[in-house]
Image 1 (spheres, rainbow over the protein chains, first blue to last red):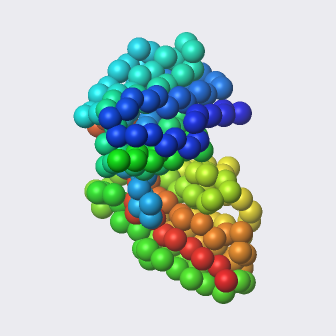
Image 2 (image 1 turned 30 degrees about the vertical axis):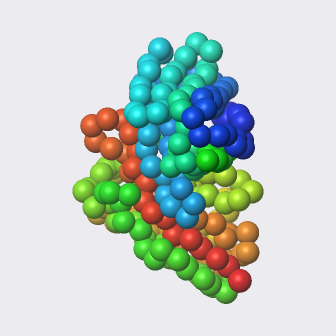
Length: 113
Length: 113
């Protein structure tokens, strides 16, 4: 069974600081996703990582994927308050003719002024 | 999210009543998913529809839950004899056509009292 673990689950940081969120998964997959969720809102797609070594950047966020280590990271550079949200990673699990995303528990990020 | 409309946005129902949740993928995606997000369980896969293939119902938590997709478009998730543990946000998602991504609807927040 595919398991996805994120850490930390809670992260409080000051504006201007850097930090990394980690996403480990237990079985081989070649697709990994990062989503952002604001309170009371749905999931907003941030990154789709499709291959080993993939790196994508958008603003202060950068995501990478190491399929051999079964690890993805979401790096936050010079955090600002607007980045406060919950961040989820999800791994695609194809199975027979079906497929589904298996989610981590999420990392609740709070950026303090 | 753009491309997926869900209704109602909020539903309060009495324990034991049946409820029907609706998902309308605006642009006719072939792959459609239902997920449930609850405080204790995180994001859980419920069901997957792909074209005319038999749906993957492996995530439905009990036989009180059922879903259908008519005409390859609108999908309804029905919960019979609701229980308090059914309280959660029910999210519909579609697979994007061109970039391997998944777009989530705004969700239906179900509260069973």
